[in-house]
Length: 388
Ligand SMILES: [Zn+2]
Ligand SMILES: [Zn+2]
Ligand SMILES: [Zn+2]
Ligand SMILES: [Zn+2]
Image (cartoon, rainbow, N blue to C red; front, side, top):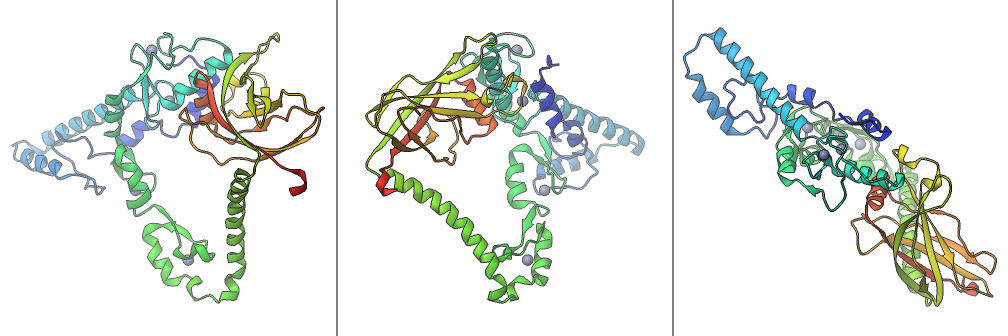
């Protein structure tokens, strides 16, 4: 189906949802508005009444039990086939999955999930090649591919198994079912805040609470747990306070970076990104970024990272203590991430930082790569020496 790059094979291996056939073969109720004989009792709270009504109507038909059974089997098979067929028609042509909405389509209508689409575009960037549809080889890019809302809505009406209770639900309701309604969903003890590590199905919570030792423990027994929790909370608070402190310092600069792709003129040209020069704190700077720290053939890997280097372009005579961190930019669709604050002492002989990690996920990295330029926000704070 797909001309196999390591990307697509890896995805297929990792893919747990390929088993659409299995999922739907266990399903009996969904999409069965015309099915006359559903023998399995409703397995989920979502089975709706219209089905029952139709069942009753069709029960009146005068047929021998054998014929009836045969008929019901073939209708059920057809039913399954319809769901299977729809599932394979609507699934992403790369990972064969139905779960990664949104769905995009190539100019000829081949469907790709959002993750695979941005991964393909990122691959094209890394290989310095035009990206093509894995099915029809036509060129694909952000402007000639659009989302297919009808497909997304149709997918949300298809059945999926709850991984906890194994009941069949519709895809659009699975999220709320698994997080709030499923009686088999994994649940922590109410007293986990004071150290109970019990974890079990929601329907077992009540019986656990009946025997849980924690409500009757003495304060002295809980002290260590509480100290640990306090430490974690304080570490997080400290990170936030550091940012707030830095933001209130005198010498602060904010720059919105636009990183544009370039290639080295090596024998095997490598992709890197660079901003044009910009002024911040009365000095000239630029930022460079690279993928997977320049390891060869990043297009063959599933995991992608982005690291960046801050370069001082102005001549200086004194050292400058700088703290800096990167946030998502005001443009682009990157998700917010927790910043890592770096420090560096710029001196006349040290004008470039190491390559530093940008704390974003591999999928977010692909999203950045697939866009025409990368937009990030850099905050720089000059720290006065005697105050630190
Ligand atoms: Zn996909
Ligand atoms: Zn195509
Ligand atoms: Zn469930
Ligand atoms: Zn407990």
